[in-house]
Length: 116
Image (cartoon, helix red, strand yellow):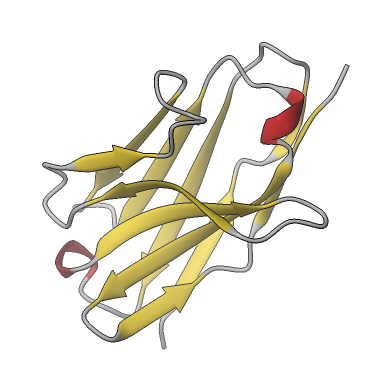
């Protein structure tokens, strides 16, 4: 069955870095656009970054441009989010998403907390 498993979250100080990973299985990974979303307490889930199936096109939320980098390794069925210069407002549960036409899959999320 389809599985998306996030890892790499944790507690980091402001200005620090984290690298999230999303391991995918159960579907043709390279055929899906992949995205990272996040949801902070009391807020709606928001799109952070998206990457096309072949990895040639990426898009970012304005709030993370220049600080976060999305990438994927189709040979390993894995997507990444490199997060640099982290701010307290980046604190949220980060979710992995796979989308293709009407198909939409979600991971269980990984907590990222940015605090001194």
